[in-house]
Image (tube, rainbow, N blue to C red):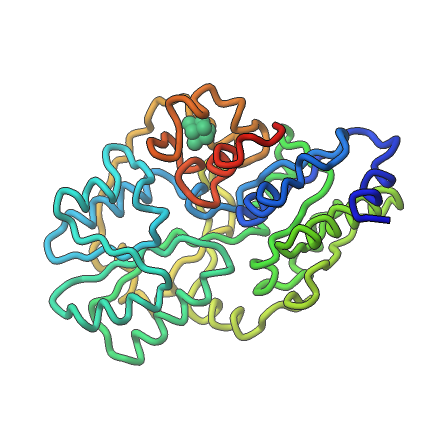
Length: 348
Ligand code: SF4
């Protein structure tokens, strides 16, 4: 029996089921493989808050823009952040106006930039989840070892488990199971998700792995189980990557953090510990920023909670497209709206 036949058989006679893929990489993989199209009508996949750029609030962008305008400052960032709009500007606009904004592919690239430009303050925009945060932490440890005095971090790094806890407490969010993010689970392990108490599966990113994870969710529902299953055993262990967890704990402490669409989530952010405060640009060069909430019809906040589909936003595909995006969900390559737009010939 093929995987899709198994899914059809398990879904037969069941109520409508909604499974949330938490991770933006899963969203893209699901679209690429056409998985939404082959699922039975009563099994729906909804996307969650697993795109780090998308959940970054406007005020972080405003701070990054403000720092980029300061003399002898270089802002180093992943490319996705360039076009995300703040209250009045984007980093792309500031770069066009003369700011020094460099696109990097790893936080470790900042070590070289800082070493080669000793007269400049290099600020890395640390945006990401457990997947990338250990590399950012390792960059701080390397910078200290190398005696670099001109590398700083503006941090909006976030943790996934507290966001899932928040979603489950949200009466608007209807999910019957989670496809948990494989890359995050490599670092965190599976045990950390045991509080969920609904069916959940750590999934890989190949089409077959995602289908196996859906089968796993359906079987759990069929048998009345609520487990954290692991369908990505080749790289994910129950305890996770202890070395990466130790580096994170050495460099960062957990703090409450603001998420676009989800609000302030307790203990869901990472802040550089006091012992490393010489790398924290907000301690070294504090700025008073007054973000102005823009009055747009963008529904990113609801899209990120799986409460509305991108196509239910009246700007989707009209005023908001990848080349002139209104919200971050259309800008990031892992953004839900961008994925829906790019693979728009598929069934919605
Ligand atoms: Fe926001 Fe554009 Fe998505 Fe609408 S389509 S929710 S405006 S990013």
